[in-house]
Image (cartoon, rainbow, N blue to C red; front, side, top):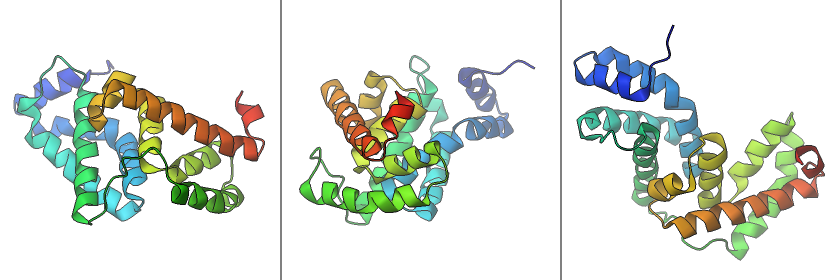
Length: 188
């Protein structure tokens, strides 16, 4: 069976085959959930936000311009949904690249993360989740969701230079943590 493209599925939904939207949900639910879980640091809130994002995307499908990739458009909705939840909880998304407090917290929880993980991939994902939110989002969008730097800048509503900086600094911080537990050799 031919794998339908996002555009073909969206066209079908817009023609009235609303049940086809389930194909989009199946295609993007895991990666979008990871993004929200990294943002919100709470599994239940991430699940609720994911549902909201899919509903918002469904209700806005007719406004999707097919010049861009659907994934970029959808991740922008997911990101904005997560940011709204953070704002409603009176937390601000930290604009600084890192702070002394975050780095201190990161180092203190690193041993616990290492001890609880069962395999290398689990440890890497758990370590990414311990990074400051904006780093974790940039790393997940780039490596897990395969978005380009320009798409990441669009999703996160930041400049291309800032997207590159977030990814660079996030990778360096992740690398330092992996080196700390001698996992870097296995990855290189």
